[in-house]
Length: 60
Image 1 (cartoon, rainbow, N blue to C red):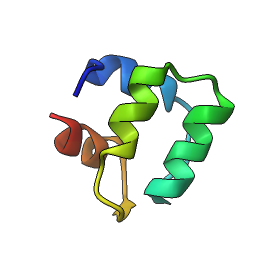
Image 2 (tube, one colour; image 1 turned 90 degrees about the horizontal axis):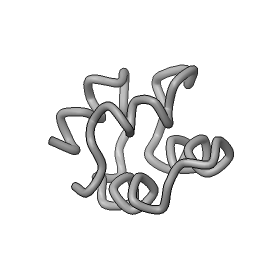
Image 3 (tube, rainbow, N blue to C red; image 1 turned 90 degrees about the vertical axis):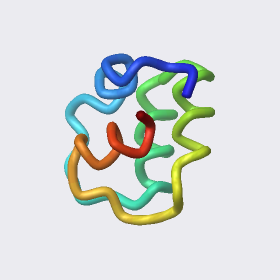
């Protein structure tokens, strides 16, 4: 992971859950997340994430 957990959460602020990885990536791209954040999200397992804590655990 190259981005801080806080930076990732800020990029995904306002997103409703649950979301699949693809939906999270689309949201991040639409909200102009940095290339590092997009890269980190691309490396997440392809599954459903129920809340921000799920994403933080995977990226930790």
